[in-house]
Amino acid sequence: MSNDASDQAPPLVGGRDVIALREAAKAWFAISLQTFGGPAGQIAVMQRTLVDDKRWIGQQRFLFALSYCTLLPGPEAQQLATYIGWLLNGVKGALVAGILFILPGVVALLVLSGLYVAYGDTTLVESLFLGLAPAVVAIVLHAVIRVSRKGLSHPALVGLAGASFLALTFFAVPFPVVVAAAALIGWILGRAIPALGARQAVIAEGGPPPLVSDDTLHTERPSGRRAAIILGAGLALWVLPVAAAALIFGPSSIYVDQGLFFSGAAVVTFGGAYAVLAYVAHQAVNVYGWLSPGEMVRGLALAESTPGPLIMVVQFVAFIGAYRDPGSLNPWVAAVMAALLTTWVTFVPCFLFILLGAPYVERLRGNRGLSTALTGITAAVVGVIASLATYFALHTLFDQTTRITSGPLAFDIPDLGSIQPAALAITALGCFVVFARDWSVLRTMGVCALAGIVVGLARAAM
Image (tube, rainbow, N blue to C red; front, side, top):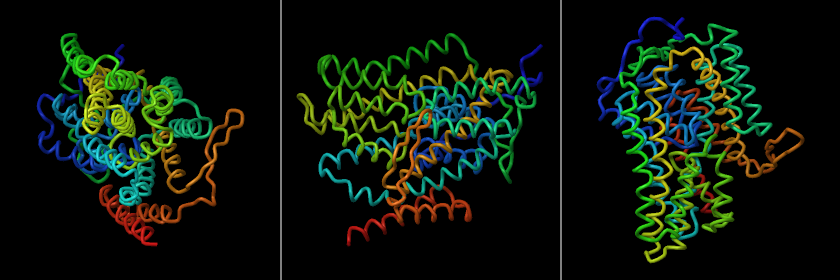
């Protein structure tokens, strides 16, 4: 008996560009300028742009890709962009989407790192971004509602999403454990509820069918030769810059230390940036001494304020460390080179994982067991986004929170006296324009950023 959800051969896509590469590149660049707020906000931007507005990819296809990327080490939103870029335009599309997704963040954090080193005060920059964090709260709340409405097609999945939210928010269950449990529960539910594993074509509201529909199959077939070429090229690109640094500056230089350390961190970042930042902070501060604990916190704040994955904070760490220990180089040259090297070794594995695995995962989309397991993960992802929305809201709307631990419970509660009226007002503004007026993400962020600038200038004038 076939394991496929349907015995009919699925239609194929991808023999040529689904959309013109130039048009796709413009869309990915526009998306990259809106990727504030960590993975939840980034997923929300792609959901709205690619699924709801442009109709380039089907809803279930989007959620399937997201579930697969959630299983991988590294920033899942950047990998999701890479995967969808591959679906639309093959390997070229994957590279364009993945690179453009992080490029604005790389540039912005380089500039902010330089301002921090040169002036030691980012008040002016922070006033610019004062309105962006509340905007992200509104955008992420909107994403939770939209993704849950489209991805939770059965009450059992709603319950699984709720359980995942509680486990992450109130019991501090490690993210990989939540994902593994969700996959197992999804597989069990699929055997008990046959309809759960059936493909359901979901057409975006009020629009035509997507270009990459829920039941199409990519034409690029997996093969040993293809895998060997990609693996060889990927490993060479990953290793060669670190090897060159060892030859030029010596194996004990800070560039080699950072290259090796962040290469290792790139393959253990299961659970997203928050799950690995504690490890990175401990090593960078206490073992290598690249920066102080307070500077690690400020670097995280800068990464939160810039587009792109939150793990980009490693670029700030490398910049500060190399500026203070430049060896024979000018400190500014050393800092920029270390920051770019660290960014390189952090993100090259992301492309490698997607380009290696995507053709195999595509061929398994019809496998009932895998489909139901990933359906469970999709439900858990809704809980993850809701948990991140809660975390982000707490730390945006309140200046102080208290960590409560009691038995299995571990959660943050806000100090009500530390509420930030300006953040609350801008969040309300963001919710109004995104929910009631149905504004785009970019317009929402623009009006909230403008409100933040007004507040920041008013504070500076007092």
